[in-house]
Image (cartoon, rainbow, N blue to C red; front, side, top):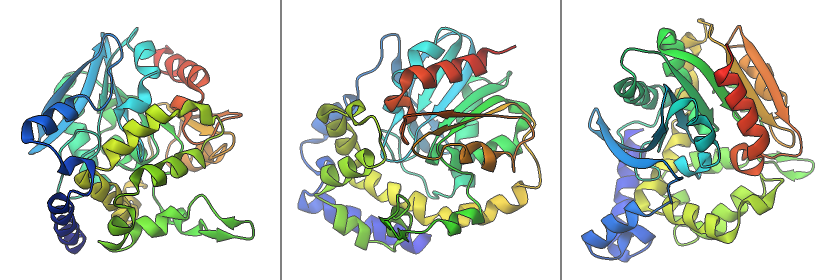
Length: 326
């Protein structure tokens, strides 16, 4: 891990000094201003930063009531929750965080799920020190929150996980190549390659790559018009963000290994598992039942991987009803 991070740091320096990547241009004042304007906030929400163990975490906050923490997936930021946030704000204090080094959050030393989860647990408790909170996580957001949930069950009231498994040895059964060609899991191996090869191959091509990555996993492709893809790509292309997005995958073997002892303890709170009909589907619930005793499994038909944006009406209804159930 440290050797990966060292190589990535050298690559980031090279990017910054050669003006590759959007973060490399402009004066310091211009860079701060552009960071503030990465994504427009929904009405009633305000951005903020909170330092946890030296990591500056960026978030959007709005609403009133018990806390719900929203944790985004790969290639995205808090912005993927923009349709869900106003609905949850009717019953909850909503905090949508950017994962470390993604969006506008600062970098961390380790991208193993257990280490990121410690940061996110402390972050959530700083907003709700005396009451349990709800959690909604998508994709790699699950990798980086499951450990905090299983280890701090009194602090988490209800959990909604969508479109990714809890990392375990089942990941190694996903082929990168099939009789139909490349599978949608091909990127696991590519992102796991040692630095700086993936970084060098992606640098300067971030918009092309991310558009293909998102649209090949989407059914409702109109959910991602050019302006949205532009914002995601610009955010993801920052050298620190591009590197960290790969480090989450480079740490995945470690995350899966460190999950093994945690799996001996089952989640006891209500858990909502949601899969896209053209993506994880029912497997989301099947896998979660290995880790939790009270799982409600739902599949949104006609939807791909990006549930909060492809099928917001269906997704919002499921999540709101689940979190407000008595």
